[in-house]
Length: 373
Image (tube, rainbow, N blue to C red):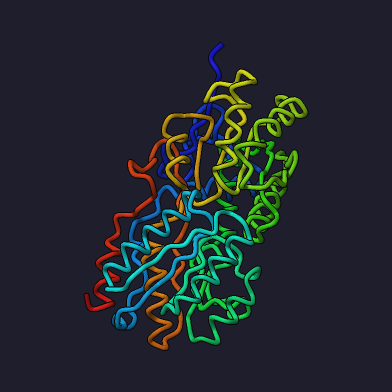
């Protein structure tokens, strides 16, 4: 018997209802009675229709300040999202005429603190905290402020925008809440409001805990959905630990385990061995959704149908350019831009050809115009 599998992004009909395959809401069918399902379908459809013009960055800002040294302190360069943002910073630094040095904290708080201290010893004109919590580095950031060195974060807090209490001029990110809700909404819409999900996070990181809590709350709003478990597992050990963790969950929940929501795609990569060991094909449940930032591994799994059906992507290169622009504003004595790029739902229907989601919005030319380059 052929198995019926829905595709929520197969198309959007003129009424605004999704044409999502067998058993889904269609023109002439009764719409779902659960308002959470209707809202989830609308959110998925809106992401599919989103225009590249939403990714152009701010309209104006200060001209380029004189050349200097920016140090990008990476939480862990093996993380695809951090590496993508760093590459964007590299592109933008070259365009504005600044030098760049990248240091790797190698995934530990101690390592990040060590390279952050090393960055301060270089007396740069700006520091970037790439993918680790600013509140865990209070002493170093106080030192940076005393030296007059502006610090900009990338995923360094639970919300985008200025965070003077943590010592950040601003934190560059999409809205973590928007990312988490969109991931949960995809599961709700894809399942016609019956998603039974396990959520994976690492509560050592505030942004990861926050995303997991938002996803769980969204799933629980759906009447016939359920959060089977929220698994707290170290992100740095996902490849080693996930096979046994997921194997246990497959035994524990059986056919009820239909969706896997993860705050980063590395959990999904670590789970593949367990899926294969359990005899699950790539298009068998549980259907995995990454609520991280969308990197090359996420896209390859989505593209090939290898257990991952969706990824919530961020415009990583654009965010790198925004980081440089925010540092330029800080150096010019101007306030942060306030720009927050929207997340993008990526499915097999529109997975990018490249290694990151890089919207064709012309944002590079916009920033260069602002800087007078």
